[in-house]
Length: 68
Figure 1 (cartoon, rainbow, N blue to C red):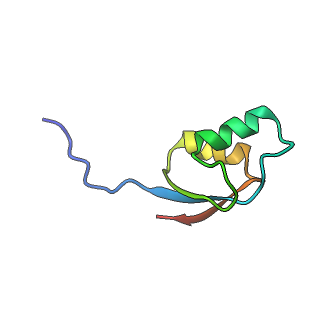
Figure 2: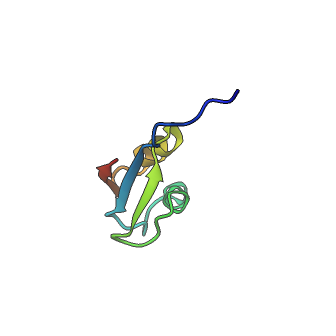
């Protein structure tokens, strides 16, 4: 018998607040991995350790707007 997922998955709303211009290629690719590529664009992402790590790598370029 499989367990039913009754709890809703937590999500984060992330907004890009910094430009990737003159940033290392790794930071540009991290923004693209998060689904961000333009200033003030927001994305709703699943709250996982991988996403948290990506946000930490580019914390100076993004802002966590809301945690659901």
